[in-house]
Length: 439
Ligand SMILES: [Zn+2]
Ligand SMILES: [Zn+2]
Image (cartoon, rainbow, N blue to C red):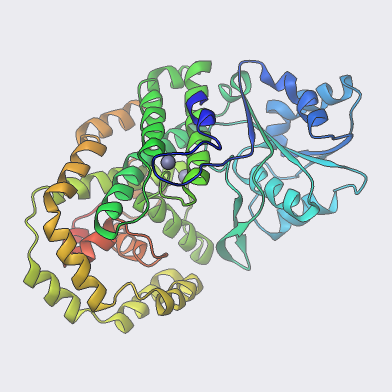
């Protein structure tokens, strides 16, 4: 965390300035610093909101701290234990907002934080998030993942000005939320691997400093899995800080690359289907963890492959985009339309650019294999780790059917123009055969 903050505003070998403006206060007992943080942001009257669970976890204490410090506040408890990230929740939080307030405080994790970031953006007021669980990597991001008009979208919002992670609170979070946070950290193996592959093939911007911060953060989480399950404060802090580092790293890179790859797209597809068809949705990190294991297995299979230029060119020649768009519509419903219109601009399937990428892939195949080898964990070891943490590992563990993974993987290449496993497999002409056996 210190190294991360040291990089802030300094020149870097990658040529890009790395900037991040939020203050991160993490450690044991740091919730007591909330009143100071409010005053530092010139807050005199706070709008503080939570849900029934996060009120118990830290909201009650936060309100007491404000009161003791003589800071006026208006508190609002969302009436749902698991609020949905939709119009109803945002509307409820907005309608209880008091216009005399000059600072917003969210107490919670995923959905509460997404709503808080929106409120802060709408009211143009500073925002503090008191994290109650090390469960996902959205603490430091400036977007909110919402369901609007029944569609899953990422809305621009505002990153928190202060992120407070008190390990006494975090370590008492439900274990499933900690597992979810761990899953979101495991995803970073794949994201860094794919970032480097795209750097090699497409010349995409890459920063080794940022990547190495992420690698360290992941290692710290993986080394402390047993302790995390015992609710050890340091282990909970490792996951929380890792997730914040992931978020800051995205700010530093100006892209989601350091923290999200094909596994996040797998989770995104599951969310889209859930919103459209009511299929089960597991937590973000849980879905990412299943995606990570799937991706690691598929990359492992790539290691045994010798690219075949003729086969790849023939595959792309016979690829029928209109037929594929029809399949996407059927699989994702309304959400597919945005992806299809994006393709009109991005032209990801253009045969000429494919041919250029293919040359690069074949010419750099050894380099690609060594990136996979360096960045990804051994699949059996990853499985063992996830078993130890008692994490869901397959779609059937979260109420879905394993056979859907094939179509989910194929749909990941259409989410936006980001070079991930499914794009590489399509370029190589092996996407269909490789996804057939994916579970
Ligand atoms: Zn850099
Ligand atoms: Zn994530």
